[in-house]
Length: 297
Image: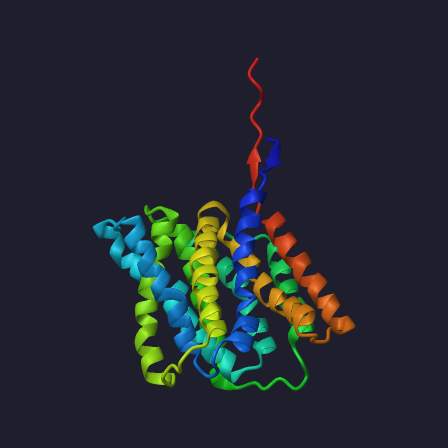
């Protein structure tokens, strides 16, 4: 029987791609606008206020049977992921942390194979590996420090985000996107609150620029970006969504080059092209072939 390749929703892909692109601006906002040495406070302020706001505005409660799954998703997508992310960021060079995080598409493929018996195609696997290699060429330096705790945190963070992306798609919570986003941000923020309280130093008096930075992280990096991300998960295969996460470190590199004058070598440019090629190849590979039925006579 003849088959045809279905088309991915490219409009949804472009909107979803805005989320990791926004997250890629977090580094420059944090280093240039926020007070130093308060990573968990930044993560807490990014998530809980807008999560509470969305819950109050949408006024949609999960069904009783969904509370457990929603708690798992909030922990994986927001709470644990943000905590591991900042531990890795403080103990590893940013390039090494990003290279480790680039394995997320491979982890999603492994979960789909193990739990759904959905064997990944060779093109998708090769494209995902190309993304890891491209990220290494773009960001990894020979002097990178291989801190064991930092590496473990980076791997755990990648695993949390991959599992959260896969399970959000697999479970398909019945809540509307904005309510689902609000409950996950609220739950993740509540998990981050004691971590920020215990580990970070007290918050100083904030300047107008610092307040603007926290507002950007919360409204744009939290509410808008996560709403786009969860909307995309509902419409796009989980492997395709996960590969878009590579745009986050790529955006951070481009912003550092444009706004801060950070140098880019020829190898970095090769890596950038390889990462973009990997993302496009994964999108193409995750389209599926379906039978073409004969036209009625």
